[in-house]
Image 1 (cartoon, rainbow, N blue to C red):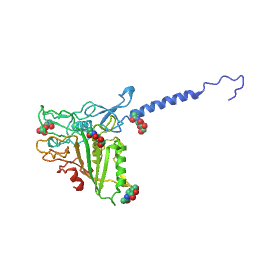
Image 2 (cartoon, rainbow, N blue to C red):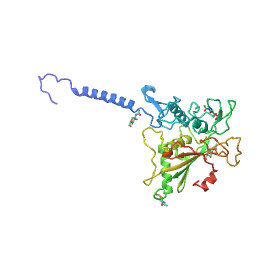
Image 3 (cartoon, helix red, strand yellow):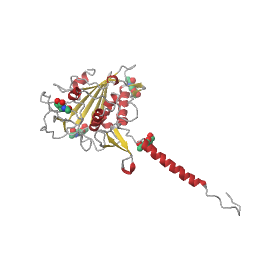
Image 4 (cartoon, helix red, strand yellow):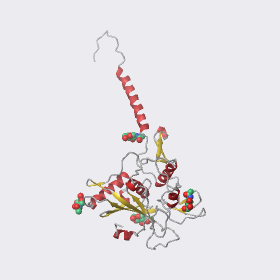
Length: 327
Ligand SMILES: *[C@@H]1O[C@H](CO)[C@@H](O)[C@H](O)[C@H]1NC(C)=O
Ligand SMILES: *[C@@H]1O[C@H](CO)[C@@H](O)[C@H](O)[C@H]1NC(C)=O
Ligand SMILES: *[C@@H]1O[C@H](CO)[C@@H](O)[C@H](O)[C@H]1NC(C)=O
Ligand SMILES: *[C@@H]1O[C@H](CO)[C@@H](O)[C@H](O)[C@H]1NC(C)=O
């Protein structure tokens, strides 16, 4: 812009000032927005606030107050603890009857270690103790406080057995396989190598998760946690904040799950005095529902309408299960 001589000096250009103001405004709104969406995408059972280093968003699990990493799944132990605490405070959950607490091994207020894993020994308020595996399922008889659990036994194989509602036509196995692998990779952030296999014989789908201690490296999602998030998704109780329900489609056709059994196999056989385990069957343990009678017990996760109802069924050995998949 040319200026003739003799003209008064121009007023200070308004642009830099305006720009500064705008930038400031933008920063303020961005800050406000960050506060607004200071939530934990992978765990809605948390309380979040700008308490992290530098005022960053930080989330703590309900019940334990443990800081959780919202870029990955939260451990099942912390989730169960959060669930029990919200049950006590009546936050949108039905308080299970006394009977349910006593009978249902699947729901208890667990002790978690520093890393959020189950402590090997769990006790309830009345000093009744028992040992659990890495999915928090009881694997010994109950004892008193003298009971010892030397180490946390790892559940290295999880078999999820689903039955789907009749679809217009049977799913294409390889497409179903791909859809489920995508689900576990993207939604549950499980390393694809830990999803060992997907078996399908209409209407039964079996998902095998395998992960032993030497395969798992720090930062890997544990199959116990992936299976637990999946279980809650199936029940219509998604743990993700605002990302919607699980939606699995195979060539556009939605997968509606009718019934689910989850089998847990440990690296060591469980130790129940009441039953003798077949020696070849290293560690079949499944439980989670009700009290263990003889034999193995299976968790039945029912579909959305019957969500929360657990039923006890007689367990099958894995081999048998494959041969009679609709059982
Ligand atoms: C807020 O949401 C935006 C967009 O959804 C996302 O990119 C950003 O990381 C979120 N911030 C926090 C602190 O969660
Ligand atoms: C503790 O466990 C024992 C044995 O299962 C049960 O009888 C008792 O009611 C439990 N107490 C609580 C508070 O859960
Ligand atoms: C299943 O889908 C794959 C890939 O889309 C295809 O190659 C295969 O022929 C299909 N199988 C059947 C039985 O339709
Ligand atoms: C873990 O799994 C891998 C691959 O299946 C196997 O080679 C390895 O021997 C297993 N380790 C243990 C301790 O079971």
